Structures are given as structure tokens and as C-alpha cells.
Image (tube, rainbow, N blue to C red; front, side, top):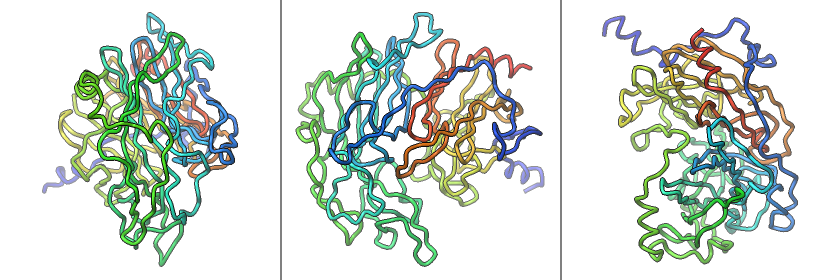
Length: 453
């Protein structure tokens, strides 16, 4: 291989022109502030005593909020997220949703008041706080994740997965948010976080229990409510969950409506056809495409790729940007030529950041990307004219909320970004310290002007 070809093969997929004032230890990262944007809190919860009662007091109670995403349906822009009494993926985790009415000219969104906040899906087991050590003999820790899909005919379907968080592993390959279906080797499992013979058992383990769906609708006031019964997709929940070859735990009963859910095969044919074949409204956010078993791979062997975003360069090539649990202060990226291709292993880039970034394209072709520091207190936005060289960077948000204690949460600011472009604005949603839900409105024209300067 000639020297030029070797240099090209080692080049980062992205360049970041680090501003002279950039300092990861300073307020705003030492960056100039991006003015002309608007931010607000969509959801600010109250402390819950559900651990004692097994039930949430109201939609406002529970100090864990995360996994926020957008769904567009007709005149409504919906924000949905997981919510718990205080812990990430804790027993009795539920789904909440906030509906915003899109103005006719799409210039703004009216998020209303409490009437537009709904419980999208109730808890699958009684609510309690998550254990630090999973030495329990039975499974009483079912939580749920999932969300809405909107059809072009106006219908919406909710799909949820029931999961269990049980144990910790030293091998990031078993840290799979989709949920494991096979036992983990005994030597890769510990009931609590620990270090044994140099091995750090620090990644929590998730297990797939069952999958469900139901049709929902938005009423004229913005409340989201069921429009039919809950149906089970595929196999029923196991009576016993085998977490390792030597550890098996019986599953305690589920709450309604899961306990009485009928198989999807028993639903009316028209409903099943709509769910399986109905034309979906495009998702607000992309999911990079990988060959099976390759989504965590990095060229340098640090195979801990996790959250992701994706954008299209002006030349038509596609780029996935990932954070890496094994290299948590650097974004990784990979490039592919066509939408239908799969991504190769990612490479480390000069781009500073952690957790889930978000990116997109402007009408003129320039690319924007939003990321955060490791403490998740500082959020920045960077621009690139060609999707390769990011040479303009600003501070977007600086937040340091003191959150209530909980498993896998703590103090911090905006994190785990999702975005949608709607008319003249980019809307960015995020959790604040995994407790509140915030949203920022960025005028497209502002970024177009800055990209052209």
C-alpha cells in the first residue's frame, strides 16, 4: 500500500476544528454562546413514595425521566419518554407522553398544560426502587420500554417490550438494551457491581420478557388514551427466567392490562393488517443500519459503541456518529455510500463528546451536530458545510441540575438528544439529569446564516 493510501485508510471520518477558546473544564466549554434559540422545561416531576405503595401518586410523581423521542401525527408533535419513581429501568417503569399542537403554518408548537400530559403505558409490575444487588429469588422487577408509531391514515400504535434488569457483567457484549434471550455464562454474571480478580462487573444486564401492542389516539384536548385492548406479540412471558446456567428465578404476576392481554392473532384481521402493513409516518430520527452482530464494533478494538445519530453529507454519503462506552470522551464515526448499505466498524474522531449526540442536515446542505461533555453539563452545537470538516462551534446549553439520587442517574444537564425539523425550526428534546424533560427550539434560518458566513 502506498503512503497516500495508507494515510487515507487511517484518516478520521470527521474533522473538528477545535476553537482556540475551547476548554473542557470551563463553563460553556469556553465557547461563544449561540443566541437566538429558545429553551424550556416540558416536564418537572415531584418526588414519589411509590416504593411504599407500589403505585404512582400522579403523572407528576417520579424523578426518573429518560429515553425521550418525538412522534409526529397529524396536527400533533408528541414527546414520549420512560418514567420511574427514581431509577433507570426500575421495577414498574412506565411511559409518559406530552402532546404539542402544531400551528397551521408550522411556525411553533403549543405544548399546553397538564391536559396534554398522559400515561402512555402503565407499569407492568408494582413500582419499587431498583436493588443495588440482585440477590432476589424471584423476578419482581419488570419494566417496560417502547413507544408510538403513527400511520399515514391517522392511526397510532403503541409497541412495548417488557424487560427485566438482573445482575451485572464485565463483558460489554452482554450489555444489550434490546434484552437478552439466553442465559449469560456464570463467570460473566454477578448480582451486584463488583471487581473480581481484576474484572469490573459494571454493565447491567437486561432480559427480554415479552412484547405487546395496542392502538391509541389523541383527543381534541391533547390527551393520549387507549383506542382498543392490549395484545401480546409472540410468545407469552416465561414462568421462570434463567439468567445463567445455574440461576433460575420465577416471574411474579404482571399487572393489567398485560396479564389479560390476548394474542395478537386473536385481534380483528383489519387491525392486524394495519399494524403489520400500514404506511408509517417517517420516524423523527434515524437508526444506523448494521450487519447482525456488528453494531458495537470499532476499528481500534474498543467495541463498546452505544448510542447513535446519523446524517447525510452534501455528496450523498451517509455518516453514523456514535459514543463509545469504552472511550467515553470521544465520538466515533463511520461512513457508507448508500442508504441501503451497512456501516463498517467505526473510527475514533477528534470530535469531543459523550452519550447520545444528534445531527441533521440544513436545506442548503450544511450539517449540524449537537453533543455534550462527559459530565453532561455542557451542550455544544457544531456546523460543517461538507459534513466532514466541522469548523464552527458554539455553546448551546449550560445546565447543572441537582437531581434526586437514583440508580444510573445523578446531577447534570441536557443529555441523550433527539431532534426533528418542523417548518422553520429544529426542535431538540433531552432529559435534564435523567429527571426533567427539556426542549430547545433552534431556527433553521439562524444555522443557515451561520453556516454561510
